[in-house]
Length: 329
Image (cartoon, rainbow, N blue to C red):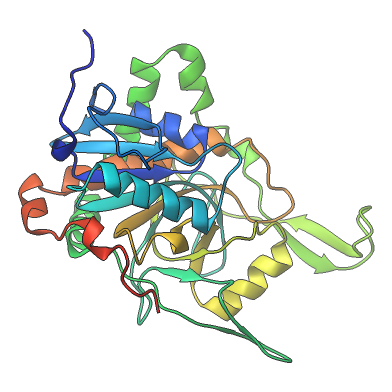
C-alpha cells in the first residue's frame, strides 16, 4: 500500500538527527510512513521523512552529509519550522558519548534524556564562555524542554517504575518487521564488546602517553535491556575523545551524563528534548561498533516519549516557531 499524503499543517513534532544511521533508526520507529511534503519553503533545503507515531504526525530531518555541530543543527531546525509552522516541539535524537562514574552506572547502549537540574535547563554548552589567564568561565543559559515534554518524562518514569517499559518491545519490532541485514545492523553488539577503561599513571602502554589503561570491573546486569538515565547533557562543537578530558569536564560541569554536538544550537530557538544512545565512553577507544544499536535505543526512547504525550496537550502548547529570534543570552 502506497504512503498517504498529509498536509504540512498536520505535523506537530519535529525530529532532528545528525547521521544517516540516526535517520534510519528513526524510520524504523514510525507506525506509518507518509508521502513527501506537499509543500516546502523555498529556503528550506532539508530532506524529510514524514510519518506517524501513535497520534502524532512527525517530520524527520537529518543534517547534510559531513556537517555536524551547533550551527548546522540550528539551521536545520529553523528551516523545518519555515515549512512546518504548526510544529509544537522538537526531539533531538541520536548517539552520544557516555560519561560513566561511581554516581551513575552508564553502559553502552543506555539512553540519556535531558532533564533540568537545579538552575540548568538540561543541556549545558561546555565550550561557550570567556577565557581568562588561568580559567574558563562559561556563560549563557539554555532553555529547558517545553512543559508538555517534562510532563511526558514524569509519566515515562512512573510507567517504568510499574514495569511498563516499551523500549525493548520497540527494539524487538525492528527484528520482526525489517530485513535481516537491517535487524542485524541495529542489534546489540554483545556484552563482551562493552569495556570501560580507567587510566592510571605508570609505564607507557605503547602509545607514548606514559599511561596505562586497565579495564574497570563492573557487575553484570540481569539482561541487555538499555537503562534510561535522566539529567544534564554537555553540548559543544568539539569531539571529546580522551578519558582525562572527559573526567575533568565532568568535575567542572557537575553531574553531566554524556557529550554530544548539536543540542546547544537548538534549545533557545527550537523547544526540544534531547535523547542520546550511548555509543562510546568519550575516550580514544571510540569506534563505530555501537552506533547502530545506540541510535536504535535512542529512537525507541523517543517513540516511548511520544506515546506518553497526549495529542490534546499539544493544542495548548506554544508553537516552536514563536521562539525563533528570541535572545539566547
